[in-house]
Image 1: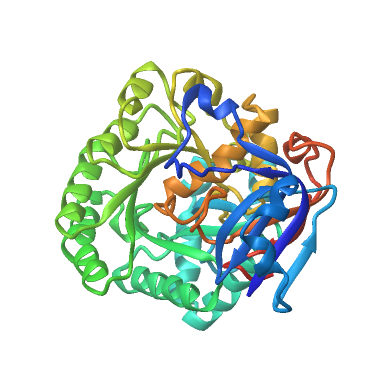
Image 2: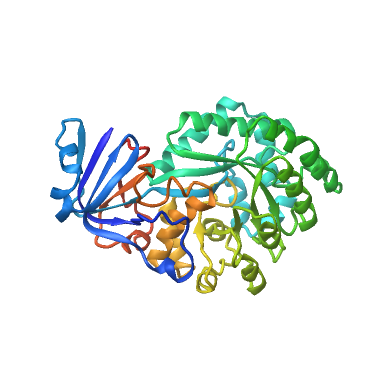
Length: 418
């Protein structure tokens, strides 16, 4: 399919230099073209420029052919589709009963100790069929696509047995086949400790290392591995053991870290060259020093902090220290039951004092980096996949995080298809 988008009010996140990420003060600068055009062919961006130069461009003759679909974007903006680098959208059912417990005053950890939380989803996961899980997840993927998401990372972690974890990863593999979205899969067997391993957590870690990892890697079911390295979950020492085993099987880490305390998760993530460390509500000077000059993307999940009423990650301090920052939805049934990346942008600005330019970088190019797809997604550059958002008529790009609760997306293009 060939698409020509004309009269774009502002083409956001233009990046002819193909930067892998944006960090520090550069996050406050958003490259864009006003009154622009964009040409797409065979699913990729072929070129773009100012409308004033269109008549002299190579795309004039191409666009004169009858097989080009033209879109007049007068008054509208065009930008890369969101890259949501942290989700748990393969699950069965919902957990609104726990939400009521939360309203009544129980904490996330208290609900978990009562057999709720991740363990509740794990019980349901073991009973659900792969077909049920695929059907539910596809509905969620369609929901987020309509809101502007073009790429998602999906984790296992609600299985907590070898067979159930493998089932989740097979479901994610099926979603890659069925959904047009770009999907990356992450093995998260170390999401929680199953009830039957209570008081013998080391045995469960042994199971992950000796049985789960070899089977996941042997069947090619995961792009990455994750561990919930935090207070009440997995220790730094246990995380170290798991990641060492994962390295031997070629699995690159992405970590849950420092959501509940200064857990050491950030430091162990950097030690193993993790693609990202995620949550980061508890991030101080020592953690920032560890992240500086590393290849690890700090990824904030403000939907979880909002839903659980936790402290907010120090995004402003991190960016002012020169770090890059990505943001993701953490879409899951217990602590962030929403994949709306537009709301994530609003939370970044309203609650974490990030500038509109910074939140746009955080959910596009830096989000792409955090899921390892920055070479093909996250910015407007020739040769990158045409995963695009066409906004409704909006006055400025600052309106995107400002107008929280409303859908600013008019059209979504995925792989060059409307």
